[in-house]
Length: 613
Image 1 (cartoon, rainbow, N blue to C red):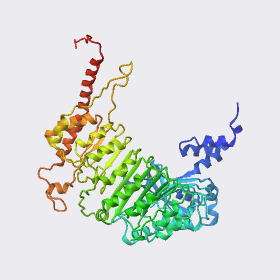
Image 2 (cartoon, rainbow, N blue to C red):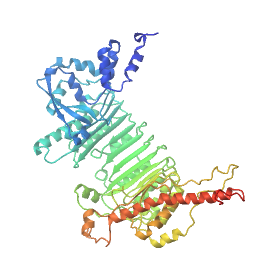
Image 3 (tube, rainbow, N blue to C red):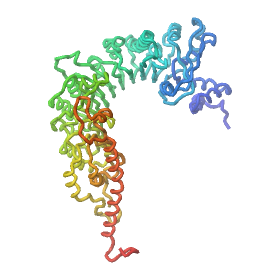
């Protein structure tokens, strides 16, 4: 029988990687001399924050204060208690002996586990300044991955740039800022905010100083409320120079507060390894009045997510992409003025005629009028009107034969009518989710889609969610639909086994969002009967009000339009809820009736059951 000491070092290391909790590794490091070194390496392989390194300093060099976090703070820091460290004296070179011993073991920094830990460690801003002065350059020589989220409100913002090394392979960093009134004096808050943003700017300064040839994943974002202008700390030239030093990226993401110049996007488009791009650009201020060329190739791109303020630039960029493996396209445009059908057609044509049109399975196109963005930020009223479009503007998208998910938002879904919906059913057989308009929490004006226009969707055998601001239910249209023969659930069988292949597959739609479509009480059974024929598996029907609660109460919208008399949002929700509850029973009854009829057709003549039927 072999002994533990006979195992090779690699096997001992693998033993230590099987422990789920750091406490178990700590006990192992203290009790087993043979495994102690491997356990220590595993303990320090991934640390939750850089502040943990301060615990390696002599105990007389720092003091800590403990604070129990509230429920909201716990969700921000993902910990129950936070220990805030501050230094009692200046740090000497000899104080870093233990830190220099453990630092080579650190391979990754990650606090994105989404598991609430018992304790978290943060340093005060003054402590970080003193710590940065004492640290050696590239003090974590084997650091390969940084995947963390810092929150300004709980004081967990760390100087990431100090710890970056040329061997870094992944940098995924999110900075969250929620400025709450009365939390800090105005002057103190401004100084701390500037200090936090300067730490973010240090990352780009470090990337600009030297090429990071091993960096594969770069993701950086700022989530701030209210919206903060960070361009003074992150000027466009600094961001461009830093991005141009990244030569082997596979994934690149930058948040909405970090705007890229076209020069940076051009550099990214030439990278042969780049697979995913998420970028925000402000183009109109740079190329106002200039014709856009096709200078963006992206030869290996799989996922494109672009936020711009210029539709011609976006169309030109999509046309220039040479990748034949593009699978996901997400385009969000904040446009300063209304756009014409010709401009929309130019963008949809660039997508529909793309070399990868047969492989694209996800498409998101949305136009946000700039006045809407400004109104939302100022919390001012914004009147959402249906922007009528000619149906031919979305015709090029029919070429996306592998499409599985689509979102056409405000400014684009107005091109839909019953005829285009029928064409969608024929062109996208693999469609699973379709969202025309905004989410279920924001209602838009109704489109021209009627209840009967939903019939072609019954042939989509993978569709699970459909969202469209549908027109009001018309009683004459409903009466015509009720005269149609229900689809046959059981079809004749060509096999010897009479039970094989009898059940006709049905559309698996489970969620239907009808927008603000009005439904009369007398039409509830009829609507349920019609929908149960096409979508027997519906479980949720969502209805959204086009008005706020205050508007409904006073009877007038914010733009002065009088609300139709008798409008009752709660009543409409109840009516569509009744339709939702009736669909499944009606579908089951129809299924049983047709099954009974089909069984009688297959039975030999003269055979009856016990009841004589």
